[in-house]
Length: 190
Image 1 (cartoon, one colour):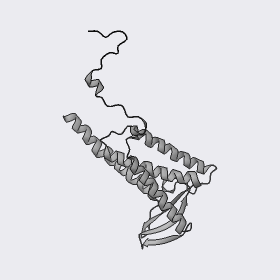
Image 2: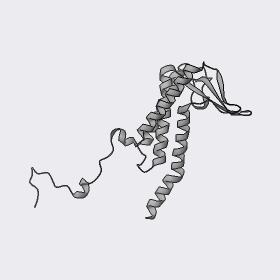
Image 3: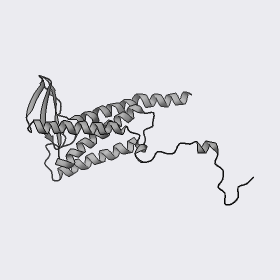
C-alpha cells in the first residue's frame, strides 16, 4: 500500500535506531571535567606563587634538583620570544595561544569515542592552554614557577599548565603511534 500524499513515509527500523550525530560540546569528545580541573589547579598554583613568592625570587624544594621560582614568561613555549623586544609582543603571543586552541578544537572533533588516551591527552592540553591563555589575557605574561635542574643542566621554568600540555601531548602521541594503529589493524582483520 502506498502512503497518501499527506502522510509521511514509514521509517525503516534500522534508520530509526541510528544514534544522532554529536553536536555542540559533545562533538569535541573531551573529558571536560579534566580540562576544568587542569585550569583550576593551574590558576590556584599560580595564585599561591604570586601571593607567597616575590617575582624573580626562589626557594629550594629539593636541593640540587627542584626550586620554586616566580618568573614572568612573556614568550611562548620553552621561553621562545621571551627576550625578543618587538611591538605588540603580548598580542602576538596571545594570538598564537588562541590559534593553538583552535587547532586543539579542530583535532578534538575528529577523535573517536574509543580513543581514550587521545581524549585524556587533548583534555589536558586544552586545560593547560586555557590556563596559560588566561594569564596572557589578564597580564600579558605567564607565571612559571617550577625550576628543575641537575648539576650544570637546567630545564626551562614551567607551571602546571605547561605540565598538563606536555603530558597530554605524550598521551596523544602514544595513542597515535600505538593505540590507533592497533585499533585500525584489528578492525581490518575481523
